[in-house]
Each structure stands twice: as structure tokens, then as C-alpha cells.
Image 1 (cartoon, rainbow, N blue to C red):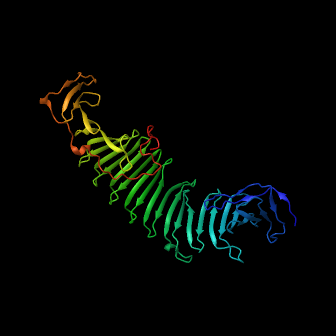
Image 2 (cartoon, one colour):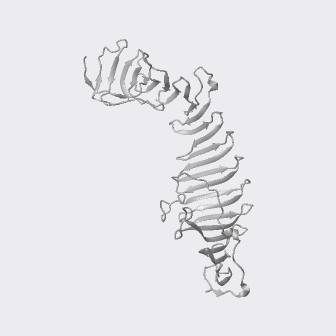
Length: 412
């Protein structure tokens, strides 16, 4: 047996989405005798010297000038035929087969795919071991590519119309995914995954009818947004927006009027807005964690820091400040800014003011004065304003930092 050393070796991509076969030089490959496959115009059998998926590759040239590689895979016994365009290394046609039964040349077809002159995948079919269709794809005139995956169960001879699509995948001309629609076995739509500009991605989850929207998620550009819908699939029940500045949740009534708004800030102060039945804000609570007190059920206790009251125009007109759950001061605002005209009341243990300091629009104060008994008015707010609402907060992905870019409590 005559042997010689040549610079040759072949690695053939076996993945379904592969668009090309690549030839890699290997000066340790062995070429078997030329008399192997004399029935062909020209043939050589290559045995890679280093461990590779290909155990042997038989190459031949057909009468039409196309190159044909017959590949036997070492790992699984899979075989495949690769046909190249004339005078080029561009793939034209690939057929892969399952492991052959004893005495057979090859097993049933595993997948088949074709490429156009630009080496773009133009058509494909993938089969299960029983011969049933698992997937197919087609290149459209506009350059988009659509692939369908099918549920198992259809026999090869069944009417193609009886096949049930499990997923429809759309790619652009560069083969980047643009849209994936997943279906249930009954044919109803369950999920739509869409890619937008840049790194934006959207996920829409549907109810059993395939029409009613359950949740919507959008990610990308440093943000994560999700919305959970009421049973009508039209109105949002709760939504969440996460950025480097923290996370904001909003709860709505069925008529889409605001009910609550929770903001988790980088300073780890939780702000909660309570709205009236018309959706207008009444008060905003600010809560902090008391790290000096023992944990309750594994969590630090929430302490109220201060309240902000809204007027009918939606502006803040009063602030209540607390220390250790006790009201210590109240500020009434009379201008457009919190540093403008205002009065600052010092509150006693009984909830009545003991002193007042008046500021003008230039933030200058009068030095303060005691509050007479004739001016005693209780400043204790509505009791419900000081209670933290029990909110059903949607869980966000574990890799989302709920409190944004916090430097004091990194990793919490």
C-alpha cells in the first residue's frame, strides 16, 4: 500500500445553520491508494491524523464539475454528502443521514439543505429518526428567511397540512433573528419574541386562547420593562421599569387609573405614592431600612422617614418628617419650589406644633417663634398615610439590580 504525506485536511461544519464548509491544512493527513473508488472520475479518501468529528472523507468530482464530499462521522456513525458549486468552495447542497443499519450504506435522512450562489441558506428540511418532518425553512425574495419547527407525531406519509407548527422563526438577510412565534400543540399562540433596533428585545406571552395578552417584557439599552395585564388582555394591572437609577413599579385599576407607585432608589429608600380613586396622587411615603434593629423574618424592619402630601393640582404642599416613627416636624409650602416660601413647624409629642419658622421666597427665615395655644392645630396625618401598603410586587430576573447603581449597599 502506497502512502504519502500531503498538506490536506477537512473539517465540515455539521450544524443545521452552518452556511459553509471550511478546508483546513493538515500536514499529517494520510491519503489512501488512488485505486479506492475507481468507478469515479477522481477520488481520494482522507484520514485525519488528529481526533476530529470526521473519521474519513471521500472526495470526488462529478461530470458536471461539482465537487462531492462523502463524510463518515466518527462519533455517531452519521454520514453526509456535501456538494460544492463548480470551481468554488461554496456549498451547494448538503444531505445528512442517521447512522446506517448493518449492511446499509446510510440511514434515513437527518437533514437536507441548499445554498444559493452567495452561500446563503435558501432551503432546508430536518427529519426525525422515524422520518417525520421536524423543521423546514425557505429564503424569501425580500432576503428574509423563515423556518418552521413542528411537533412530533406526524408520520412521513401524512398530509403536510396536518402538521402542527411549534415555532415560526424569521431571520433577516444577515440571518439575525427578528421574530419568533411559539405555538402550543393545539395551534394557539403562546409567545412572540421580537428583536428591535440595537439590542432591544420584546417578549409577549399569551393566554390559552392565543389572543389575550398576559405579559409584555422589553429589554435592552440598560433597561428592563415588564407589564402584567388584567384578564381582558388590554389594560395593564402592574408594570415595572428597571434602569441604573433603580426600579419603579406601578399598579393600576381596571380603568387604568393609578392606584400605587413604588420606587426603589439607589440610596435604598423606598418611595410609595398612594392615589385616590381617580388616579390622582394623595401622598408619597418614604421608607428606609433600620439596620440597627433585629431582622424580622430575615428582613430589616421598614421605618417611615417622611411623607409628602399632594394638593389638587398634583403639587407637594406639605411634608411630614419622622424620627423613630414619631412626627417631629411639618413643612407647609406656599411657592413652586420646596426652598421657596414655606413654614416649618416643630411638632411636640402630642402632635401639636410648639414652634414655627417662616421662610420667604428667597429662602430667608424669620428666626422662628413659639406657637401659642390659640394656634394649636393637630398636624397628625391620616393614619392610613403612615401604613405601608401590602403590594404584590412582580419578581424580576435575578440578574436585575432592583436598587440600580447603589454605592453604599453594592451587592444587596
